[in-house]
Image (cartoon, rainbow, N blue to C red; front, side, top):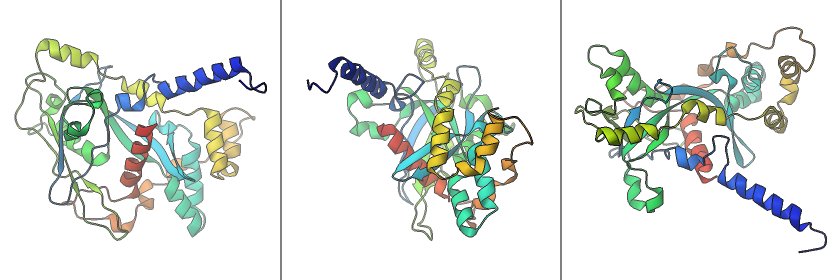
Length: 318
């Protein structure tokens, strides 16, 4: 060991870095251990098909929604859990920045689009068939396991229809692991190329199986239910510290826009007036007009889905 390097300090630092690699988030597990890899899309005519069963959450709920901000900063994707996930009245510096930028020039409006708030849903999901297992190593196979499935609003609509249609919908049976439960058949087509050359996932053909079936014996189901992941704990693990948020705001040149309100909110300075009402700006104002397509396509025609896929793959590699 070099005389300029302390062996003991380096060994401690080495252990710290190894621990970070083994435990990259506060939930205590690697993301790849708990999150189902983003389902890939097929072609316009032939979908990639996956099958599984939504399961109730540990706390007795079902699936949850969270809000976030995602944008590319240099060569790195940034993911910020929005405080409005917990209460829409909560202050969020990125929502505030979006609102203020939208009041500015055309260039400012373009920046506002990058920082706009997005939504995603997450649920425990027992994977019956993921065709990608055929190409995975044994230790990475997911069939027969419970993972958290993060899904977009177009998929959530499928669940909501079954839940709210009291005459024809399956109701709670879409979450039942027993013999009356129904699997979800996720069929991911590809849309036609849009004006910007993008091809998006199309979930319109996805549906719940008409036939009910159990996920196994009562003992099997008990083990499945014991392997569920606490969604609230997972969402909490996505939070960044105040210092991290401030650092990102400064890197994005947004700090000057929100510094005074941030300080008021954090009680750093004496409270005066209320913070900017960032929620006054409707996210739909940022959507491209070309995104208004007929319902038959049922695609996520915005940069959200593309960004999501890229981000999720980057996170899966962390």
